[in-house]
Length: 271
Length: 140
Image (cartoon, each protein chain N blue to C red):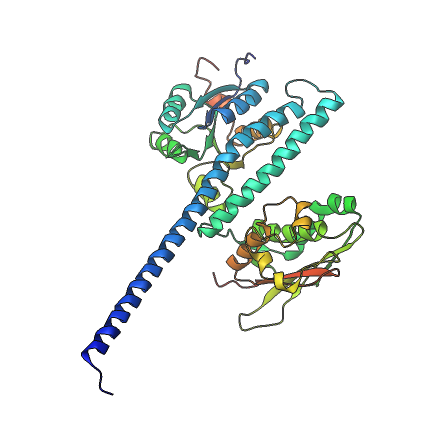
């Protein structure tokens, strides 16, 4: 059937309506992106501003604790120590939010030096000793001998391992087993990499939540998260730090059996 | 608390009165003579007038950059024996920027109170004895 002028006009009208819709969608997307960036900027500003009074509170409390203004009795000392540990915990959370906001705004950079993964793991295990003992866990460390040094940001790699180990400790019922292992990753097209594993015999994560845990503010299990007072940003930050190094992070887990988090750090970085 | 003659003079450059009060208390109680500036201009004027042994410098002074103080002092040859950045910015880039601007060290706030007086002694010892270099000052 030959097309009439009416048909052509109708097609043109539909086309122009579609174009208009596309334009509107593009505007909405741009607006949402803009609002998201504003929210990230707000997070960054507010955490920066929260740090100032917190710094003053902690410094005053530590001046008192250290006896610089005179000695305290035992109960006064205990009370001041609680102010300090609460303040430092809060500061840690504020710093975490700031780091996250910086990562979102692509303002994080690496300060690389030649490090051995063994020394980082030793440092993190030593830091976690008292927490492990308090929960009655056992920690085992298994590092393949002769791993090559890596050009990496020591503080950030320490942060990743400490975060994974902290989660392993927190989400494992008392008397459980947690471990850290490091070995060469199977050779891939991206070259040599070291594979680090942090595992536990804890509550585990359901497969449908595997991707969710690396997303910001994600709390897979509200009741479990309640005993783990965090910002919900720890794994999102770990993910970012590993990515910045050109590595990959993932997990294997089964509910009630435990979790294993893995990440790789390339031995020779492209950066 | 009264300061002893010959005590180390510290200039705090920091835009928060809360933080200045805390650090002033700490430093005065541990025998230092303290003055404080809240802006780049105040800091430069005080540094020239008082010739402190140590400048403790916050990186963010409102919208100003604390490191501008050092740039201005370096330009006019009035750098103190020791300049140290006090910062909440713990990213490596600011650390490198501070060292490049002439800071001897970069401390992340909050500083451990017992550490600061010890660090000040160490920095001054490394800088070759600030008291000698400022002994022409009547306050010394």
